[in-house]
Amino acid sequence: MQIEYFYDESTGTLTYVVYDTSSKDAIVIDPVLDYEPQSSSTATIAVDKILSFLRQNRLNVRMIVETHAHADHLSGAQFIKREYPGAPVTIGEGITRSQKEFKRVFDLPESFATDGSQFDRLLKDGETVRVGSLTFEVIATPGHTPGCSSYRFGKHVFTGDALFMP
Image (cartoon, rainbow, N blue to C red; front, side):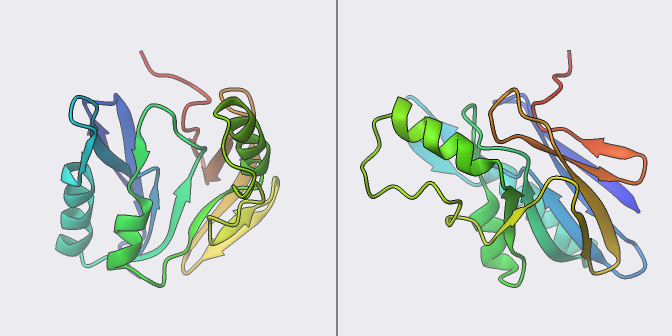
């Protein structure tokens, strides 16, 4: 198993690609979509770097994983999925708690679904997920948001914003 990280300076966040060099299976964790608040516009600079890496290494994205709903940046998951349509966009099942809170706080319309249906798959706390040749464990880590999950690949744990770096 190999890990490549991509640091997004504008948001101070990290995207990870976990991959197997033999099978070429890959999982993308927390892809960032660029957002310019002054003009309220988006760009795919960060996503394009990830896609370039995936293509150069001939990797097959098998899953796109979010650690939580991000308030400090937008997700680039759907842009990755457009290039790899077989890769489901996933998140911990705690997202439903976050959605209910966001719906209340942001006064979202009654029609806004709070059942996680915006994602292809909800991951359960304690679940072991096998994706091609890669395996990881789902660990609910609420705190930063009610729906945070961390993901353990062997000795490596991807925490999203459950832990902050200096």
